[in-house]
Amino acid sequence: MKRAEIEEMYRRFCDAKAEPRGELEAVNPYTHLVAVVLSAQATDVSVNKATGQLFKEVGSPEEMLALGEARLREHIRTIGLYNAKAKNIIGLSRILVERHGGQVPGERAALEALPGVGRKTANVVLNVAFGEPTIAVDTHIFRVCNRTGLAPGKTPLEVENKLVKRTSEQWKHRAHHWLILHGRYVCKARKPDCPNCAIGDLCGYKAKTIV
Image (cartoon, rainbow, N blue to C red; front, top):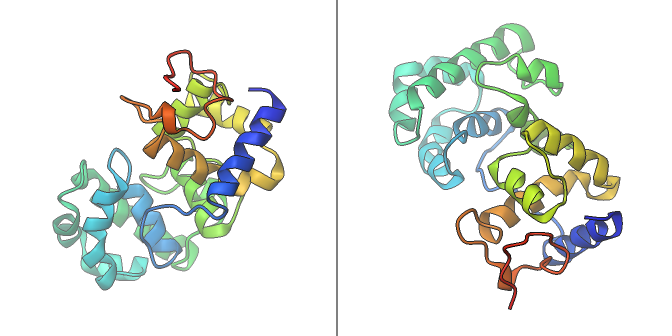
């Protein structure tokens, strides 16, 4: 995509949904961090179902440690990889208490030092919890960027770097949400809904079926 086309794409996304929101449910930065960790290789819907009761009981790392790993596993057992995720959540909760006064840090390096937290998770937390203009590249955004020609790349980091470079400042804070929602509901993996795509005329996808 050319610069003018990218600007037009974001303008259309903004016209359709000026303030996009993530679909994970949380009550504070800590529960949001836990939800994002749980969402790896799982849907937001499945995470929200599992955390509905959990977050009524737990709202801080101290409370998570008091809950314990065994009881946490019971809450999240419907989510894939729940054993490993429970271990990571207890581990990161302990670090937050011991090193960060029970608070979620707003620095990338500190976030990525937590168990179960990689670059994508750190980007989501920085964006949603701290208002940073980061762009997290998940499978949906990776697909959209490569299909459309917005920011093609062979790795999530390559796509992220191109996205950051090609997205103007006014759109950066919301770009992650627009692109993930577009990939989740329109530019779907198996059957993209090209006829109802708002940016079909800007898209470089050769197999698109605009009617």
